[in-house]
Amino acid sequence: MKESRANLHLANLIRKYPELCDSVNSAFLRSGPKEVNKANIEGRDLHLVFKKLKKLDVNKKILFAHFSPFKYELEGLGLPLYAATVLDGCDIHLTYDKGGPESKKFKVMTDRLEKISCLYDKYDVIIARSSVLSNMMRREKDACIVKDSDYKVNIKTMSYKPNYVHADHYFEEEELCPVAQPAMSEKAEKFLKKYNKRNIILITGSLWYVKTQLSFFQQVNPDLVKNFDIVVVGPEKDSSYVSSIESTCSKRGISPFIIGNVCEDFLVNLYSLSKIHVITMDMRVFGQPKGCPRMLGEGISAKVLPVCNKPVTIPSFWKESCLVYDYEKTDSLNKILKEAISIVSDDLFPESYCWSDFSFEDQCDEILEKCLQL
Image (tube, rainbow, N blue to C red; front, side, top):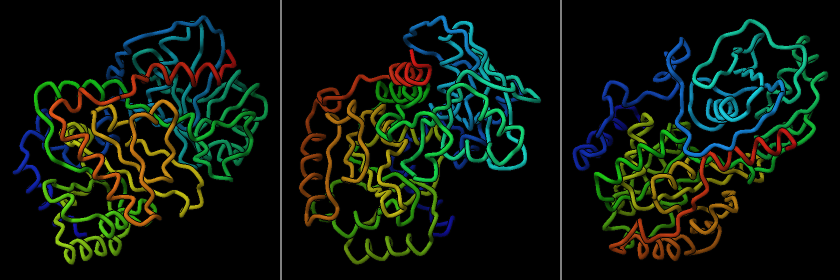
């Protein structure tokens, strides 16, 4: 899909639902978190307001390896800043490693990052993500740090086999399905107090075969969703795949808004305004037996009813809040979608629904207790 078409769809969506632009800087409508937040690294206040804290007196050197300093989510600044806030006596470093000759290095304070030139020779605990330990082992000095450090945990393997190396403990995918970070939840709460939800079905994720959005449009009964607008949000990774979606929709009389990528503020408003959130992905086609998208937790924080494809990994703390369909079974999608529409048609929705009360702070506490062996 050409960008101009995405812009047209986005403009039409905003024209119909102008409240989507509430508190959104139009200059950054297409910006990702890195572009918006990069200036924060140069000394702005990074303080996140945590609602409940369980302080621990822990005297350890901790390295958060490959956590993005440009994002507030749990796997970015969220968990390291929380750790700096609740772990008294700890010395905390953070690296952001894209596989180059050097990683970005920071000391984590409760409200800011300070750039540092080098890491310690060893740490009590390394909390790692993805393939970063393998990246570190390819650099002589970093390899010594990994080998000499006392305890290594990979909290985000993405159930991808090559990532199960160099650590002492590996999290299961269910143990790190990220809850929305506090600022995002707060934005959603403010929006929901100001506006009522509308008949929008939101489909999130990068547009390509792994996210299987095409299967939704091939299977959904057009009459079932005739009173809803369908909005597809996410970057285009495969233009031919998007063309297939458009062709299928044209033949079946479905007119979705395919709007491309949008900034976080706009996305929060979109979650909050929508009633149903369909997550279509199947990471098995990418060689990963499990997968939990970040968007699941973000949507739940905005009280949009999650309808998940069966291969989506759903942690225990969200199971009661999610409806599940199986895109490999005939008419499963329509059966579950009919149930979802019935739920969101209740005049008391979303207040009447069984939302999880598992918080960002709860999740951080669980992760830190496992990583620090408390």
